[in-house]
Length: 360
Image (cartoon, rainbow, N blue to C red):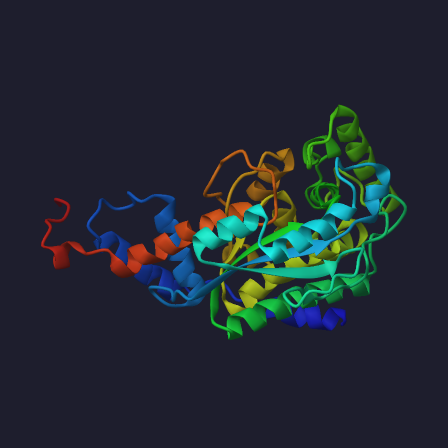
């Protein structure tokens, strides 16, 4: 895997199809409701049409992709839970016992669990094995991964979307699992947006005040060790790839690849919380059209999440005070996305219903 591959992928991602969006707007304005009265649902319906290049966009299978990986920065005491929980939770996903499994079942979606870099060997027929390495290196002492590893993880995400799309999947939610990954997400946020650790670091798994101080310190040291000055903001595709390799995680890179794959295969991706959204930010810096293919599911309790959502220009659908991760918020939002599509395809027009339209 090399930079030329990434360049080809990013250049293949096109803007949304304006003709389909215009048709969606015209259809929405003809339906039995005041224009614009469904608010964000109407904007979502337009965008979904532009993604698919069809009005209404096709419905099909839907999945929740949960990418998992471990982090060397856990050595710095940044989490309230031991690193072994990553492996244990992956097994929980595979057995159907996690919150994301419950919410995915409600949405009629399958859960696809991907090992991007868990620091354990997991043998399970339901696991997608894409392990780059058994966890990243400690980013406070140097790069979390090599450039080649980052590219391989991005490729795994893009290829996964291709396989899912080929299997008839038309809607993907994406989440993550990885003890220590909110620290990596905060470092990515600070590096790409130029915000200090105080603005990017939250309590994650529920660390106390001392743990929060350790997380902030770890992010500051990681940025310094890797030449990514907080407050400056890494720019452009090269800055994004450099940031991902130096302070990201294998599951973050995989999610960034899924976001790129959304644009390549024209499949909407519903992004979960802070970690997933930080990965989406990387993808949007790699290719400027990517954000148009992404749907923000919710706004989490992590303080940096709102900062990243604003940078991406994404409007979250839910605000429930959640901070679990796993893809839970994204899974909860799948029915809302489908409802936006159903409005286009199933709701009556003024003409078909025999309802008087707006007075001129």
